[in-house]
Length: 267
Figure 1 (tube, rainbow, N blue to C red):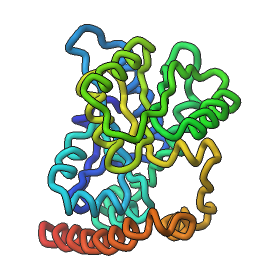
Figure 2 (figure 1 turned 135 degrees about the vertical axis):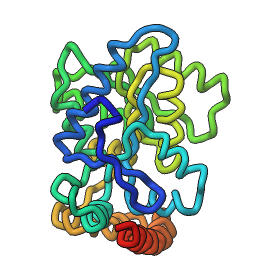
Figure 3 (figure 1 turned 90 degrees about the horizontal axis):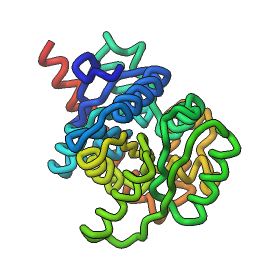
């Protein structure tokens, strides 16, 4: 799975998604981590992995720079169920494999496959309390996995010197995967920056830190399966997420219709 030229990629809105099953995506990430771990020298490059949902599609229409950032990603997985619905309808040849590849599920799957030889994990994001709970949870649940570093960055925009110091800590840790939970779109910018400067796989996993740490509740399985996770999260945090979902879902519907109309015209 590590060869980007062999991947199935299809567009929804302005985002070109990597089409894989959840199991394939987990193995893909492990392969990428092994690749960066084997590379050496000053020219060794990292990989940027993004998880995009309806809100990301809306942001990519509103912000051309953000769309270009995701287009430059090594992988952009379908984090939301509505993405898979649109993708399967627009590209029926890939419908069977176009599964939801959810950040928390990938994180758990990769940790479950981790042992002493690698990969080596670094956790970047969350509040200090969330990060402490996440470290404890991962250590108890996946005792064979190596967590070589964890830090909760301050909310303020870091200076160039602070970013350089962060990069040096990550490099010195020997990490091959950096899990980034800084919120959208900040985390997408960060994994691209990390991949451009360090031989690591940067994983923009969003709320996975809170969900796995147990500091925020996840939607019931039936709501996730039927595409209503957004409603659960909106009810849980209406003031913070109201604009995101009401605006984002409207724009996503428009982009979905545009995508399917474009595909029909091309065929």
